[in-house]
Image (cartoon, rainbow, N blue to C red; front, side):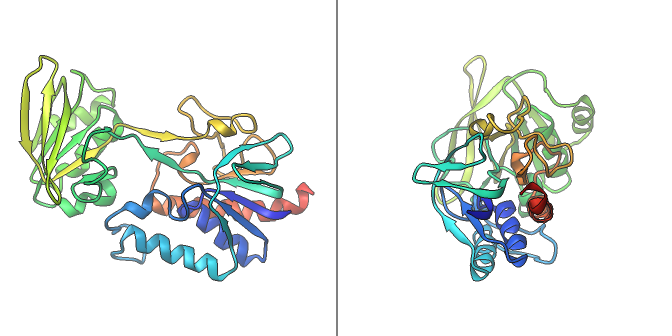
Length: 299
């Protein structure tokens, strides 16, 4: 029996473990891939307070070492479900705990094209606010049609020399105010009714091939490609014990509690407005602190 089981060893889960361990609690971290989460693949991080520049790998490794030195128990196992008795079942074992924090994050939806994985962090990014400054004065493209894509394009238009906004339809799903703002920008060009067919480059991204709805092919040379076609939470396995919204995120009115007593949530897997490294860490700290304070009540 553990005091706290944390499902997910990304920044939110690791920070939750840090706070729980410092409170002298027995903590189990479960993650199918190991520590780090998505941030481990980030080339450079420049927007985390107090750390001017660090790679995602180094950030995640430093955080893991910090909690490891405090005695965290990390098991690389895939969680299959949480049963009605709040027992965590993995592909290898079953575990009991006084409280559970779900911190499984959300993965960026990808284009699923050849070279996409290879050029991630080498020209392809899924976070404009994280990586935009690396493309100051350069040529970039944003692909997507929702608010995130339009907001990314607005943000990048103040940094990059040229912005292409690529969308598979003629109209955007995002708010009209963003589109109107972009139309006023001299360095923004819209490529509509089109999709990216191929990613080109050698050691890094050099260009993309774009095909329109009529089958016409065009190649544009770019230094960076920002993919903003949504995120995919993986919360279906928890739907029997917590409420999940229409987008697949765990519902939490106060950002900590789920619909089930004793089960908490942290990081990108919950319904929230901002999904950034700093908010994931914040969620982890708050969820662990609240869970610890309520453990005695739950017994």
